[in-house]
Image (tube, rainbow, N blue to C red; front, top):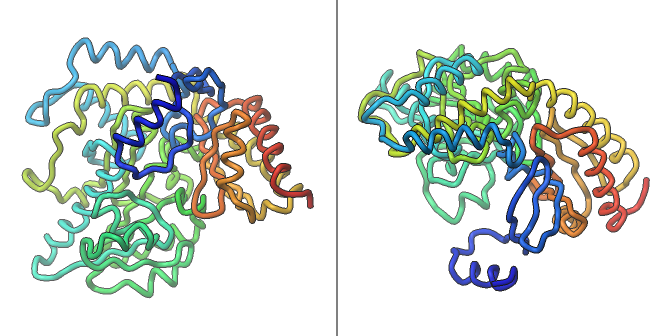
Length: 399
C-alpha cells in the first residue's frame, strides 16, 4: 500500500482520538526523521519530549537488545536486577527515597494521588480529603490524572471524577492559599507547565507552596513528566528552585521511547503498603534496562551540559525572532523546553513547518512548543530558526 492507502486504513481501524498530520514516519537518525515517501524532517518535538537521546542511538539500542536476549518480563512477584539498579539511579538523581515504576506519566500521577490520599487517611480515616491543582495544568487522561488537570474541556465530558479538586491560579500563591483548609491533602503542580503553554514557575510561588505544605502537613506533588529528565538543564526542574517535593512523577524521557514512568516519594510520604497499589508491567526488566541505559548515556555524553549550552542559544535566537515579528507576542521557557506565543494560528504555522521539513508541536491555544532531543546542536537550532522564519513570513509581518 502507498502512504494514502495506509492512512485511509488507519482511519477505518483506529479509534479517532487524534487529529494526525497526514504523514507516516518510518525511520530516524539523530535529530532527523524520514517518512514513508522518503521526505526528511528536522525534529523539534522528540515525540512530545520523549526521545531525549535522538533516533538510532546505538548504545541505547544495544542495551535494549541485550536485555531482550536475557529476560523481558517476570511480574512484580519477583525482584529483578535492572529495576533495582534503575531505582538506585533515580533516587540519586532526584534526592527522593522511594520509587514505584509505572508504564506512563498518567499512571505515575494516579499513584501519586493514591499516595497522598492514603497519607491523609492514615492521619484521619474518618474524613474526606481535597486536592489543590493548577489552572491550565495537564497531568494525564485517566480519571484520577484527569481530575487534577486544570483545563475544563478535558474534564467536562466525563462528569464526576475523584472527589473535590480546587483549581488555583498558577504563579499566584494567594490563590493557592485561598483553597487551603483542614481537608487539603495535596497540592499538585508542574514546575514548568507544558501543555498549558510553557509557563515556568516563579521562584516565590513554588517556594511558597513548599513552605505552605510544610506548615500544614500537606504533600507537595511535582509533575516532572515533561519538564524532568534534564530538559530544563537540571535532572528535574524543581532542583533549580532549591526545594524538594514530597512526591515526584516522571516518565517520557525516563525511558526514551520505551513506555515507562515512575512516581517517587520522600520516606515520610511512602504511605502505600502491600495490596494498596500494583502494576503488571511496571519496572519489568526491559523497561528498567531502558532507564539504566538512559542514565548511563546522559553521563557519558554530558547531556545536561549540552542542555544548558544549547538551551541558552535557543533562547537567544527565539528572543531575536520575538523582537523581529509582530505575530510573536512572547517567548517563554527554560533550557530545551521553549514556547513562543503568537497572535496568529499556531496550527497553521506547525502545518507550514511540516511542509518545509520541520516538526513542531503546539501547546495551549496559541503557543508553538519546542522540545527537541537533548542532543540538539547550535547548527540544528540555526536550521530550525531558518525554517521557522520562512513559515512566520508566510503568515505575518515584521515589527
